[in-house]
Each structure stands twice: as structure tokens, then as C-alpha cells.
Amino acid sequence: MPDFAISINGLEKSFPKAYTGWRAVVQPFAAPSLMALSEVSLEIKQGEAVALLGVNGAGKSTLLRILSTLLIPTKGTARIAGFDCVRESRAARRQLGYHAGSDLGFYARLTGEQNLRFFGRLNYLKDSLLDSRIPVLAKQFDLGDALGRQVRTLSSGTIQKLSLVRALLHEPKVLILDEPTRSLDALAAGDFRRFLKTEVLQRRGTSLLFASHTLPEIEMLADRVAILNEGRVVAVDRPEALKRKAGTGTLEEAFSKFTGHSGHSLEEPRS
Amino acid sequence: MIRMLRDLWLFFQRDLRIASSYRSPFVLELVEALFGAATFYYVARFVDSAELRAALPQGTSYFTYTLVGVVFFDYLNTALDSFDHSLEEARDTGTLEPLLVTQVSLPVILIGSSLYPFALTTLRVAIYLAWGALLFGFPLGAADWASVLVVLATTLLSFAGLGIFSSAYLLLFKRGNPSKWFFLGVSSLVGGMLFPVDILPHWLQVVAHLNPVTYALDAMRGALLDGAGLASVGKPVLILLVFALVLLPCSVAAFSWALRRTKITGTLSHR
Image 1 (spheres, rainbow over the protein chains, first blue to last red):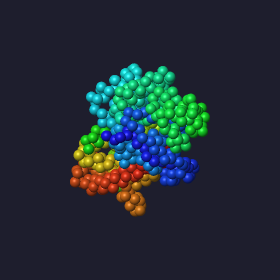
Image 2 (image 1 turned 180 degrees about the vertical axis):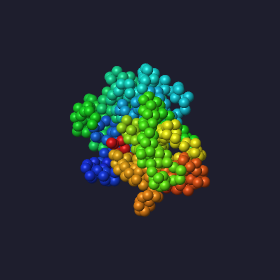
Image 3 (image 1 turned 60 degrees about the vertical axis):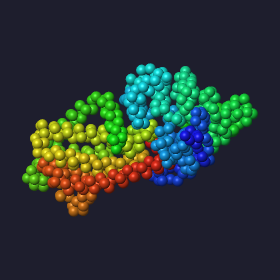
Image 4 (image 1 turned 45 degrees about the vertical axis):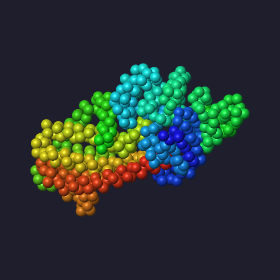
């Protein structure tokens, strides 16, 4: 067993400049020049929950997408349960559940259950396993009759819950969530956080790396917080330790101290 | 291999379920095919002449010649369209990323997603031929069905390579593929869809013989209208196989390169 659920070492990611007009023809071949992540190193233990905190454009989603094998880093390595996210991407994907925090990503004309079964089978789950896991997870997420209805008839929040069920269906060792409660109402978000805490983190011992702008969510779930600013990790520690180091009473104030951004900038809508 | 076939079947099943949630298109398809077959019949009657009959293969009427040409040309259309379309749809509905974090590779996703459109094209071709036989004397009884199946299979393999090239282009450049329209245009002129390639100027005949469509339509007319056995269609089938052996690996390599490139530039889900 590898020592770390997630191991990130000297990770860098740059994107090419976006061209417009006729120059867009060379876009696919353009050299990367805009730095999104720089020298990011982070290790997450088995069963640990780490939150990524940063303003829009700080590099949180880029980091999560590299770990989910959707992006290739410019430099450095990222490993999930010991598997390299570039060279052993399929093995790495077997160990992770990914939820992008959006209410897209399902076939609108298929029912919730048909969608879950389709994606479950693509992760090589047997029908008997799907028969037992889908109803249990649906109950835990209070999905009600959503399993039997076409996705196009479901609310944004219900689709997001369905997406979380999909991420958990193959019981991954590592769960990667990008703003997981963004589309949920306060009640559903609270239920979801409790579920993550008790079921996913405490009972199953799943490791969690999540990006969030919601500070109470971070304080409830995260063992440690990694503060990202302009693509760099500027601080990583337990929430209490971060406050102590910054000499502040709240995480929001600590964030401001470490990044120079106002805490309000965390609440800005996602671009 | 069995796992790959199972994966491909999952995609076919998905598309069948989605298609069956709509009711009217099948009925419309039936009606459209009736009008199409009738149009070819009356156009053929209008232009029929001794000179025209002399230019066509022995015993072939212009109606049967064009019906086979036009309906089987549709496979090229499907090949050039279905891979692009499935990729575009996955990107637009947000299902591309959830698919890419499963255990299944993108080439399998792409090929699996094109199975249903090919099956639908086969059904459309069958409806056209059935209307032609029922109402306008299309000689279905003359066909050598074993040859028809072999020609169809090799045609699909050689056309699929062109489709995968087209989706590699889409992945990189995000918009409709000009080479697709160019290839369709050239093929409709020199592929032998509406008239034999022998009547073209010499240099265009050379172009025609570099095009798999010419061999596919030639062989299909032989098998369907002349009852040509496997030995008789062996040469065009062999040439189609050579096209497939060259185009398929090259197109998959081009697609894999394009996918890697989009993971580097971060434009995988861009439109």
C-alpha cells in the first residue's frame, strides 16, 4: 500500500495564450506560456480530508483536473494511491471518484438509474453490485423517486446529488470534489456534508480533496487546508493552526493574511 | 477483446435507449425513404435512354444504379459525421469528462458511440431498398447476400478511419471539419454515386481510384444487382481492406495525439 492517497510533487501547469481570429488556427500547437500552477507539492494521507482554498483563478480546478487525469501537467508528478496520473492514468482513475460540481454530465433522456448503471458498468462494476449499491446510496442522498425519472425532469440540486452518487458508486479510495455543494440548497448541503463526514471519511476512510469557497464547509470537513494563491500553495495546515500562524480569529482573516485578498473575494461567483 | 466488445455494446444500448425515448423519427424515416425511392424512380424514368443504358453495367437500370449509389453513399456521410457528432454531443452535454474519468478509453467511447448511427444507416438503407423492391421493381432477389455483408463490413472499416480522422480535427480545432465537406464533395463527384467513373476525364478517374468510395459502390452494386459472389468482389474488397489497414491505425494515432494535445492545452471540453 502506498503511504499517501495523493502525492503531488513539484507540479507545474501552464496554458497557451488564447488566440482569436485567424491566429486561432495555431491554437492547438501554441506553446504554454500562462502559468496556472507553480511548484505545487502536497501529500494527503489515507483517510485525510484536505480543502483547497483560493479565489477564482488561483488554480484549484486545474489541480483537481490534473489529479482526475483530465489535464496533463507541464512539469512535476501527481499520484493517486501510488499511480502516476499521466503514465498510469487508467489505474489512477480506478482509485478516484470525481465530481466537478456541475449539474451537467448526464444523459437527459435516460433515467437517473439508467445513467448510474451506465457509468457504473464503464467502471466495470457487476450488475449484482450495482443492484445493491445504487438503492443504498440513493437512500443516503435522499434521492426519492429520482432514480426512476428522466434526468431532464430533475432539479439542479438532485442532478448534483446524482453526480455525487456516481462518484461514490465504485467506492473509490480518493474522492475529488470541485465545489461539491455549489448547486445544493442549504438543507441539502448540510445533509451532504454530514454524509461526507460520517459515511465517506469516518466509516469508509476515503481520502478527500475538495475545492470550496464555503468556509463553514471547510472547517467542518477538512483536516487540513491548502491555501492557493496565483497557482502557488502559500500555506497548508490544520484550520486552527492556520489561524494561529496568521494571528487571526477566523479562517477568512487567515486567508486574507496569507494571500492579500479580501475574504469577500471567496464569495465571488465562479467565472 | 471481450471486454472491449462489452464496452461497445454498452454504448449501443445507451443510444438505443435514448433513441427509443423519442417516438416519431422512425415513422418519419419510413415516409422519407418512400419519397426518396420514388424520386429516384421517376428521375430515372425521365432520363432513361439507350445511350445511358449502354454506359451502365450490363443489365443495370439507372434507377437501381442510383438507388444503390445514393443509399450506400450515406455510409460515408455517417462515418464522417457520427464520430464528430458523438464527440460534440458529449462535450456539449457535459458527459465527456465523466466518461473520461471512467475505465474506458476515448477511442472506445468514440467507436462505441458511432455504432448506433451506423445501425440506423443500415436500417435506412434497408427501408429504401424495401420500398424500391415493393413498389418500383428493384431486383432484391438477384443479390448475393454473403457478398453484400462482406462488402458492407469492409466498407464500414475503411470509412471509419476517415471518420476518426475527422474527429481528431474536431478535437483540435473545435469547429466543423472542412476536410469532411471536401471529402464528401469529391466523393460525390468521383465516387460513382450517380454516374459511372468511366465517363469522367482521365485525371478525375485517377482521383476516383484513390477513393475508397469508388470501390465500395462498385463492389456493392456487383453483389446487390449482379449477384456477384465473393470471388468476383474479391479485388475491390481487398482494396477496401488495404484502405482500412492504413486509415484505421493512422486515424487512431492522430486521434490519440489530438487528445493528448487537448489535455496539454486544457481545451478538452472547450467548444
